[in-house]
Every structure is written in C-alpha cells, then in structure tokens.
Length: 264
Figure 1 (cartoon, rainbow, N blue to C red):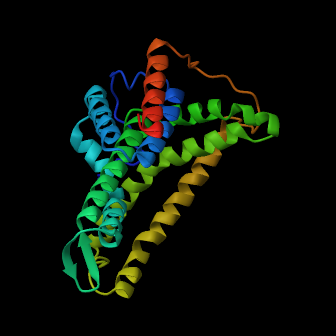
Figure 2: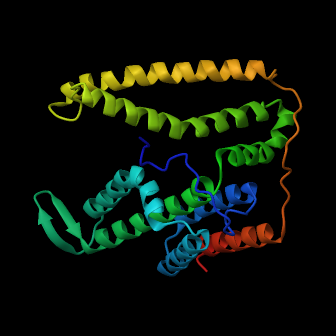
C-alpha cells in the first residue's frame, strides 16, 4: 500500500525540464521562490502565472500529481488567506462580530494564495517531481563545494540530504501500512477527543520508530560492507555539464526575477 503523498517522489520523464541540469534547477527554484514571495504588481503576477502554466505543460506531468504535491501545504495557504481577509483595512463587505471582511482583504488574500501556490508548484516541479533525490544531493554538493575551503563537510552534508530525501517516501509507505494493520486490529486513532487520538497514535509511532531505526542500522551495515569512509575522495559515474538549454533557462529565470524585483 503506497502513500498518496508525492513528497520525496520523482516522476520519470524525458521532457525538457527533466533534462535540465540539477544545479540549474536548484538555483532556478530558489530564484522563483524569491520572485513569488516578492511579487506585488498584478502584471508581474500575471507573468508568473503564465510561466507556471508553461512549466506545467513543458514538464508533461499530470496536473493531478502536481495538485497532490500541494495538498500538504494547503492549510498554510488557507491560513495566510484568512489572516489577510480578517486583518486588512478597507471597504467593509461583511461584519462578523468583531471581525470585518473587507474588499481589500479579499484581494490581498487572493493574491497571497496565488503567490504561495505559484511558489509551491514551481519548486515542486523543479526539485521533486522532475529531479531524483540523488541528483538533488549531487547538485547541492556541487553548489556548496566552495565551502570546503572553510572545512565544511560538503560531501557528508549532501549524502545526509540524499538519504533523508530517499527515505521520506519509504517512511510514508511504511506509516500507511502500519495504519492499515493497526486499524485491522481494532486500533482507533481518528475518532474521539484529542487525548484519545494522541493515545491512539502511539500504536503507529512506536512501530514506525522501530522500523526507522532498523532501516538506519541496515544502511549503516551496508555502507560499512562497501568500505565507505568519510572524507575520502570519490568519483562519479555521470559528470554534470552545462549545455545551451541550461544557460537559456537560467537567463529566463533571472529575467523573471528582475522583472518582479524592480516591478518592470
């Protein structure tokens, strides 16, 4: 039984975005995240919306998978909208006790929801759905390589991130299996009061922690069996090289970022 969450999962493909260098996608995702958070002009937001639609089409990923990846952050988006709607000053449309819903609040909340949605969609497509955890770790190691002069353990940090990203979907699948198994044994963790639900979750968390520690121990044994040594220089099977499409992509992302930053 696989978890329906797309966190930590990549979708294989041969689209243009799939073939981009992971380092370029990482930098592009960071710039797009900053652009989405700083956008204030409606025209710039429209350009960002067109960019997002174009990325979805070019990636050839089903929209249902993209929406499923947004679902874990849906509460954050709705909370941000609610804060804008209830706190913004302006022309009152509806009075609910001490709370006022204003026209400016609705507009501000809608724009905030769009900014967060565009940010999540772009970063999810570039860093999760079209890039494997191993490629992300290699890109992070390459981008942080100058920190080696400061004695920062770049390789160990990248390997740690790779292992964490790799085991996220595994743990999600494991938690789904445990929940199904405990439910078949009569465990009740989704009804009753908050204390009753917390006690019910113990029947899920304890075996999940045991399974996680067992997997970590098996991984450590496997690394020792392969004579892994921290700090040893290592070669790579595939050497990442920038090509024309990577340069064009990063130029377009920088142009979009500057457009939003300066309100062009």
